[in-house]
Image (cartoon, rainbow, N blue to C red; front, side, top):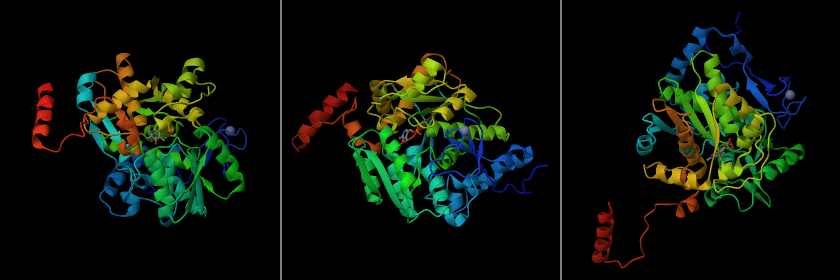
Length: 435
Ligand SMILES: *Cc1c(COP(=O)(O)O)cnc(C)c1O
Ligand SMILES: [Zn+2]
């Protein structure tokens, strides 16, 4: 007999080690297994033996909520709360995150001969990246547990999101950034939202290491993606995507990989839908890294995912400049469980892909464009086939990194020139002749 109530409600959750499987009574501040110190994941044991009809009702419930103006229903995260940790609605910190557009590509679809090519633009979240979905979930847990300080180490977007959601929740935020390695736009966001920003003379990987020491001694709640509640928020992108596709499972979803929280969350979301019988197939989830920050690519290639190979990360796609990804084990499971590919792309391939997206009116961060660059390789290798539906996850907003665009290929910035119409018309005639 199922222990679930007659109507699908929010159910209780447990934290389970992804490596040894130990269920933790309480999570410590570091969110590590007390037995083997690997990462934890949130599981919902009551859903495991839920009757199928029961789960199928979720589709209706979720759809109905889309028309509701209650904050917890307007949120693209909390709308799916049956598959999230149970919290009092008064604790929910939301700014209608999620709810991001799914847009078909045209030029790229023609050029790659992939007519069913779409992007899901998570850069359209409140602070301009998918991090908002995860921070909404995790900061809500922090609040429910009575914390008033939150903290993170960040390549930029997490800090913007943490700062904004902390401000909404009237909490204090601390962010540790690698000095000189965060784009001006992201830094400006964190400052505007009132975070205490500490710039450390090191890279992201070391910032995270320092933060681990700090939270042992300072009463701040850790919001990096080793916090399993972050991934609960981020996994909802899978649910929302399936709604947008009328529950037809795409053959491929392609995501950039940095600390590998997002790819892990995406995989978890799809696995949960699959386990509940809401989808019959899983998409292949492929993870793309920059060639200069390719620890997962190397790990898969050199030891099949057994042991992480760390690298010194270097790429202009700063959101994925990570050499020691926290969630690598979870990401390896996602690749295995969904039969996805793991590919790397060069700096010029990223720049080219980003320019091509821009040329069809779709702006994104360099890290996000790695997905299109990776897709080209996967299609050329025959891993992605013409009739298949492919969704690229664009993780961040274009305006996060304007310096990058100033050096981008194929742009048309002319002048300064004389302010008279003859000069302008002469110039335009030359341009016109070229088209
Ligand atoms: C954080 C981020 C990534 C990388 O996500 P991970 O979960 O660290 O793998 C990619 N793109 C953008 C824009 C990001 O903000
Ligand atoms: Zn363990």
